[in-house]
Structure formats: C-alpha cells, structure tokens
Length: 250
Image 1 (cartoon, one colour):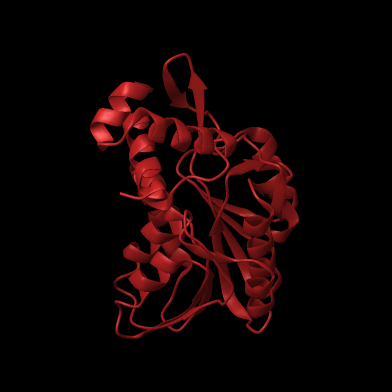
Image 2 (cartoon, helix red, strand yellow; image 1 turned 90 degrees about the vertical axis):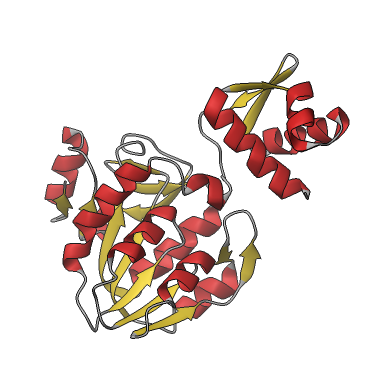
C-alpha cells in the first residue's frame, strides 16, 4: 500500500471514529508508527487532519480530500441535488461537467437520456459517462491531480476555451451571497472557464457547503443561472440570487 492509499484509509478511519492513535493506525495498516507519523505530517500540512497528543483527528475544513473518500460523504444530499438538477438536461445537449463527486452522482441520474455531448475535467466522470452508448465524452488535457482524480492547470483552462457548451454544471466547496468558492485556484479557474464558455451555468451545492466560503471565488453569483440544492438556503443568498435572476431548485 503506497502513501496516498494509506492516507485515504486514515481519512476513512477518522470519519468513522473521529480520533485514532498512531499505534492503532500502524496496526490496522500494517506499517510502522514512523510511517504513520510521516503520512499524518503530510496530511496535516495539506489541512486534511490535525495531529494531537498520541494521535490524529479530522480537520474541519480540509483543502483537498481524496476522491474516493469524498464520494461517500453526504451521499443522500448529493442524490437529492442531482435529482433536482436533472430537469434541465435534455437529449442532444452539450455540457461542461466538473470533476466533483456531486457531478458523478448526477451522471448516474441521467441514464435515461439517449444523447449528450460532455466535456469534463473529471477522470471518473469521463469514465462513467463513457458507459453510455449515445454519449460523446471529451476529457480536457492538462496536469493530473491524483488525489482529486481530475485534470487541471493552464493547459486545461486553454483547452476549455475551444468549446461552447449549452450548460456548465459544477459544484463548489462553499456558497455565500457573493457566489461559489473553492479551496484552490486551479479548481476555481476550471469552473470560471466553464462558466465563460457556456450559454447557461448551474451550480450543484448541498446544505453542508451553504454559508461557508473558501479562499478562491470560482463563480460570482451574477455568473450563475441556476442553483440546485437539497434544502432551503439562507435569506441573504436567496435575495442575492433573486437580484441576479438566478433560479434556485430546492
């Protein structure tokens, strides 16, 4: 088991029990305590966890979370968001779809649609979409992020500029009245490029991200056309959305 696989397992253990001792993690993962300390130091430096006396706990707001861990979080909420978003998507449409786990859930909700043209930066989103015979799927070029299982960087942003989609669909790490935010600039730049080259833009966001913000603005409220969510949102977000003619599906 290599380092990123161990770190994924550590996150899953912490999600189940909140705190884990170094010695217990070493036994569960069949490695030395020294290896666990190196892994957890790297994870703390990336904001994933917090090291405390004799063990580790989850960080409240990690910057980047391994994809296969993230896909298990708030799954019911993501399914609700996806069920509210799919009303806009019709056969024959061209879509930008980001690499978010909510977008992956949405792809699985669209199995009844015969034909779609999809451009994505998500490796697993592309693989899932490619299972559909009548769907045409393009994966943007660029640098591979192993943890997020996506493509990003300047080349990816330039690649997106070669397309014009009917609808851009993406999630975020936080939504406030000003708009959608993300934890790193590369994710924000990808979504900004999607929005700039689409006729309409739909944000997917569940209640755990509403009222929170990250450092980078990925989609100001005035760039959105729709927000699909699972619960009613705070009045400040609703009123700003109305002022910018953004329709909320909740």
